[in-house]
Image (cartoon, rainbow, N blue to C red):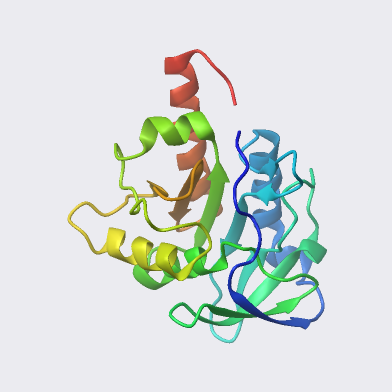
Length: 208
């Protein structure tokens, strides 16, 4: 693993508020802890965490996303989940409400929801060797777009609108180690990511 930018680069308008109801985020929490156990979410030696999950909101309910600086925690609770109530990719701004500020990758998650109507959940994981294997072999964002920036969100939109759009998983070309999965459910998105990882481990004879 290598150190990566993991701090918030957008303007965050954070309103402290209550945690979501446990039932609303139970599946999100279960999958987050499962991905943590496989080393796809965690923390670097310098203390910067990596990996996050979100789920699309409906009606007046805002999108839920794991809070910033939670990557190193083995288990999350509803108190680690916040709501994205508004965002502006071009303006590099996110408004959120909850116990914590939203993840540094919030704009990337919101970009997926904008361009992939079938996506109800998004997961962002890190795995250096898998990233090296998949980059430019699966749909990959432009290498000039860095993590957590409007440029990355715009690169995601361009990827989905290109000739070879993602089908459940894509690599983040300018975000070393970064992969994003999405789907109609956490089971769909999570199982896709785990399947790709397990196939890679079998072919390479290694484990994360």
